[in-house]
Length: 178
Image 1 (spheres, rainbow, N blue to C red):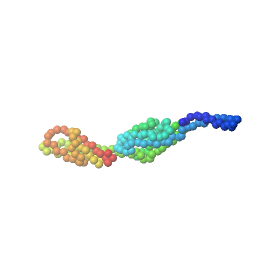
Image 2 (image 1 turned 45 degrees about the vertical axis):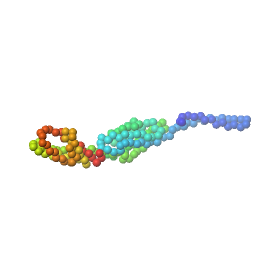
Image 3 (image 1 turned 180 degrees about the vertical axis):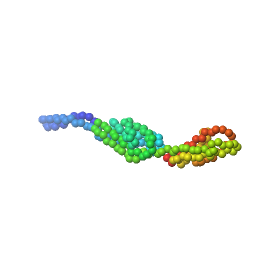
Image 4 (image 1 turned 90 degrees about the vertical axis):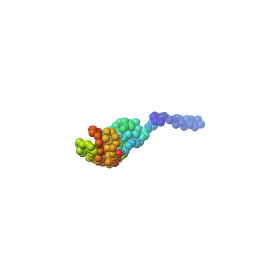
């Protein structure tokens, strides 16, 4: 327990006694800061959940390594710029303030930049062939969809058409970081 206490010291002999009182204050220790978080890496925008596991604290200041801060006890923070970040937690109580910095613990990777061309722009029947020319950067795997149906995982697939129409083509690019 913390607070003010007044213990008594009683000294006595067979015929006499004396009592002495002293008021003492028992205070909590300085905070012992610590935290955990998840995930520690991923592509931007990367949302990281931070959880305070400090002892004896009642106020928090988080610094996420990119100039942003939070006063919440258990914040979630979204990194929008690729990089590796240090995270600092400052914990306070009525006695004082202490902090902990974990260096290089969050890594936000760039997203791949998906882009493609189609050649030719107009194909003539019968046996119309259309080549999808992948111009993506930062990716190691690809998923091609035509009219919301998966058609290929090749970088530059060729599509064959036997019926006239307009088709929506979607390219999903996946980096080595997911």
